[in-house]
Amino acid sequence: MPILEAEAVVLRSYSLSDADRIVVLATREYGKVRVVGQGVKKPKSRMAGCLEPLTHIRAKFFLREGAELWRLRQCEGIHSYLGSKLSLRQFYGFSYIAELVHEYLEDHNPNPPLFRLLLSVLATGEERGCSEALVRYFELWLLRLCGLLPDYRSCSNCGRVVVQTGFYAAAERGEGCCEDCAGGKGLRIRPAAAKFLQSYQHMSPLEFAEAPGYAPAAPDLEKLTLRLIERSLEKTLKSYSHLRQTWREDGTQAG
Image (cartoon, rainbow, N blue to C red):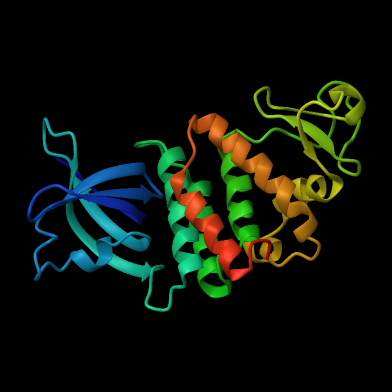
């Protein structure tokens, strides 16, 4: 019964009994792990505070013989991204990001680059706000790290470079074609968005979130990333509709 230690971010939790909770962790070392926090719902529990969603922690857990769920032995909070000064936009943005990680991070299959991306985007969102551009940055990198973002630099059919002219994306085939080859079929990605699809790879979350000229690219990038996500998951994530509504209400959707 070895005891494992990991750096983790709490993605979500569920009630298991009057005293216990099931906690879903995104760990750097072991991928997605579900652990049982025994007694964490009791008023005097020392671990309850560090098991809130979107808390960065160090955790120790073990697996009893014949059991399906790991048991949490110890946890230490490093930082909570759902602090007292959290805005509604940050709450919905972070919740959407956590849901994406929950969907794409595989059980017991580590993805250190995705874990680093998660922490970096959460830190930027905490400091500067969870803008649409920051969420797009996370989606693009998530799709790339999971092998779900096609290379849109050139036409899949004729090989013509399309960064300056834009292209038509066929998400179901993982292709991007120039105007001549697409024949007007597919999702139109205009030049502004096509350029950001290449530049994001060389930018930090903050640089992308504050990049000049993002607004014209925003509509096409949103359509593309959502199409790719919905196709790969075969469903729509409800948390995004709440986030998008919040952007509309506070007038900060593109920035």
